[in-house]
View 1: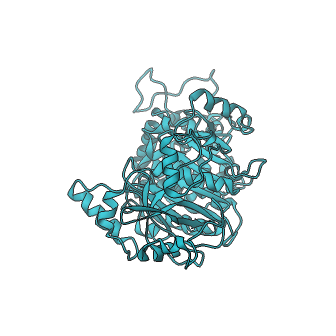
View 2: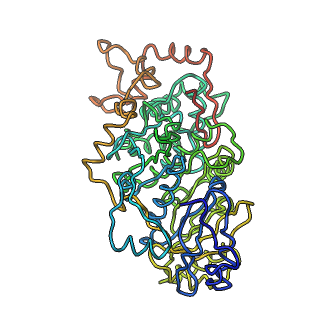
Length: 522
C-alpha cells in the first residue's frame, strides 16, 4: 500500500527480469501519486511481484465495474479496495448481499493460504480491522434501520419497485405531484394508499381537472400493487426517521474512512427492493452534496452489488435517470462501482461512464455464455492477451484489469493476481454484529420508528365520528361489510370541507429532481 511502490526503474535487475511485453504493461501502472494496490501482473502463467497493478486514488470518482461469475472472488475484491480506501481516509459504502463482508471490522486470520498469496504478489500482509457501521433495510436483519419516506423516494423508483408499466408510472407521478402541491405528506405506504384512493373518487378526480386525469382502472392497479407490496412485509422500509445519507461520509477519530455495510441477507429474496433502495441512496447523495470537481481523492466510494437487478425491465425514463445520476455524481466527488456478472448486464450508456474495470473469470458452458464472453472481450481495449482464453482460465482471486491513469488515459489490460484482504474474510458472528450496532452513535437516532401526522392521518380525520350512523352500503359493499378507505373518506360528512381546505391552502410543492426524488432540507 506504499505510495512508493511502482515498476522497477529501467536498467535495474528487477526491471530486466520482466519479459518485454510484461514490462510494457507494467509501465502503464507506474503512477506517481497515491494509489490502491490491487495485486501483481500475471504473464505467461507466472505471477510477477515486481510488476504491481494499481489504481490511482484521484480517478476513483470516474466510476468502475467489478464483474465475474459467481465464486470468482468479486466480494474479496470489494473488501480489498474498501480496506485501502478506509486507510486513506475515504468513506466507503458496501452492499453486503450474502452477509460475508461484515468481517471487514475484524482483523484477518493468518494462515498458509494468506501467506502464500501475499508472497506471490509481493504483499506485506498484516491483519487489520477497519471502522465499520452496519445497516439493515427497515431494520430487517442485523443493523441500524435504514428507512426512506415515500415522498423522498419518489415516483420513478417506487414504480420500479412495484413493477408498474409506463402508463401506471406516469399516473403515480401525478399522484405525487398532487400530494406535493397540496401539502399531503407521503411518509409511509398507508399515506400513498390514502391519497390514491381519494384521487380515484369522484371528488378526487375533480381536484385533478387542471393537471390531468387518473383512471379508476390505473388507480386500482396501483392500489392493488401497494397492498401486495405491504403484504410481503415491505411497509417497514418506508417511514421515519428517514436515513440521512450524510452519515455515509463519516471518518473515524483516527482519520480512517468509515465503511458503511448494508446487511442484505434478510432481504435476499427481495432483490428489486434493495437494488432500488441503493439507487435512492445515490440520488439522495447527489441532491445534497456540493460540487467538488475532480478532487485528489473521492469523498465516498459506493459499491453497488447485484447491479443487473436495477436495469432489468426498467422504463426508458428510469434508465435515463440512472445514466444522468452516474454521470453527474462524479462531480460531487462520489465514485460508483457496479458489481455484476458480465458487462452486458449494464446498459451501454452507463457502461461507457465506467472508466475502471476489474473483470474476474467468466464461464462459457453454453452458447449464451460464449456470446456473453465475446461481448465482454469487445468492451476491453486492444490487448497483448488472448482475452477469450484468459477470461475463462482465470483462477479465484485473479482478474483482468484496466483503469484510468493519472492523465485520464486507459492503462494497458493487465491480468492480475489480487492481494489478500487484511481483515476477516468471512462474516462476524451475530452476537458481535448486534453488539456493534448497539454501540453505534447512530443507533439512538434511527432505531425507533416514528409515525407522525401525514396524509393518512389528515384524511382519516375527515371520517365521521364513531357515534354517527354508518354510511349506507354502496353497490360494491355487501351488508355488514367494513367500508373501504375510499368509502369512509368520500362518504364523510366533513369530506368536502377537508377537500376545500386542502385545495385552497398554499401548496407546499416539493422540489424534485432525478427519479422524482425530493430534495430535503437537513
